[in-house]
Amino acid sequence: MIQFDSVSHRYGDREVLRDVSLHLDEPRIGIIGGNGSGKSTLARLCNGLVRPTAGRVSVDGYDTVRDLAIVRTLVGFVFQDPDLQIIMPTVAEDLAFSLRPARLPKAEVEARVMDWLERYGLASHRDHGAHLLSGGQKQLLAIAAILITGPRIVIFDEPTTLLDLANKRRVMQVIRDLTQPVIVVTHDLDSLTDFDRVIVLHQGGVVADDRPETALPFYRDLIDAEADRA
Image (cartoon, rainbow, N blue to C red):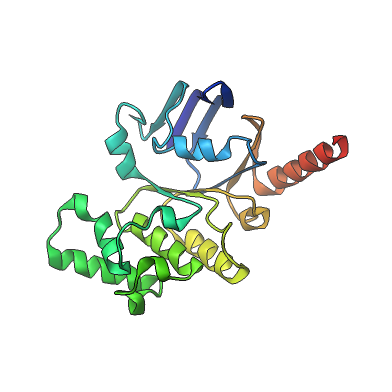
């Protein structure tokens, strides 16, 4: 469970989140909002990539500032651009790199790496250059590199933005199949219709927080109203 208690965040003089209080414990949560609404900042606050300027964020009772090392083991984060997460030269080496902190025997590392490569159809690319994969394959590798560490919660920040339709569907199916709770930041409203909860951010605050059948139309109406005023 992730808890936001009166959280605000500033980048210099610009306030991007303002007095946000949330209790996040549903299996599938979507976060939507326009550019600059604060949604990516909110996602990054969940595992300490960003620190609150005011208020407190906690994960299962662990403070994201004071207990950052523990929080990072509990909450995995998948970025929009997988190239930001791919570190090692080959596909297998990149997955193995994620397991380094665990100091596992070499045989166990190799077994876990092959297991995850097979799950996501990457086994035949085991020794290929990681940055030479297709966009969809890179995103699957980035997801596998987080999941192989066994996080209890996974945050996805616009995971399908750079993908074509077929790969968008594949990645969203991977997300739906996860046993861990997930929080997905996205502009793809149709991908959230079967989620448990959708949070709408606007100008740094939460303006709607409900089931998709209520929150998604609210957001569409909000965007239409802003367009009419422009």
